[in-house]
Length: 240
Image (cartoon, one colour):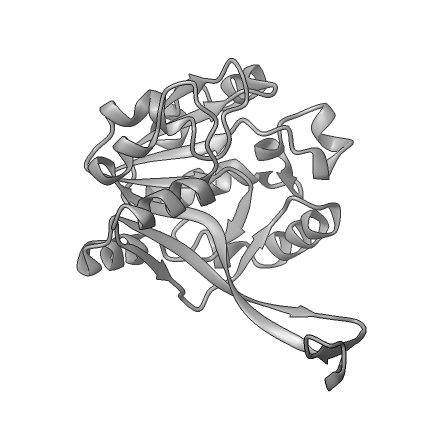
């Protein structure tokens, strides 16, 4: 099983840390970088080969992970000479991928069962399976609902809404994705998936009960450090 990990972003929301190192190398306390945790989780789920799509400070990622031997993985690198988005880098490697493969952002913290997600993908027959998470969004104001003439119809005081959001982790079928990516062309995952849906492809949203956090903002990064330090076994159950 293979995985393509998007590790080329500049991580501007997490500055100034990411001026010195790429966001996937952001350490979780004194334990390990967030990308190392993701790689260990993928290995535990049966992944043997990883392609890191890199750009910003890529030499530091190469120096840290090398060929992956220390993690029991085979790691190779696909270097972007310009930003290609969260899906564009797939074009350069798609021909060498297995029929089914993982795609992941390099900066997520989750307890999701990767092997279980792969089985869901197989059993549903989906072209792409999206790891999804329910997130509650609270509006800290009184929300006014009006008709077209601006006459009040309802007044909601600080309402909360529940939405299904992408975790930045996918299982994809190579032959379904390949026609929608082009070498050197910028493409983000939402645009890829919209194009696939328009072409009649089947996209399944897998929404297990698990912990998930995107460490893109300083507050979330601090929370991720605290949670990992106090609950390491949640994320690496089979590791010492």
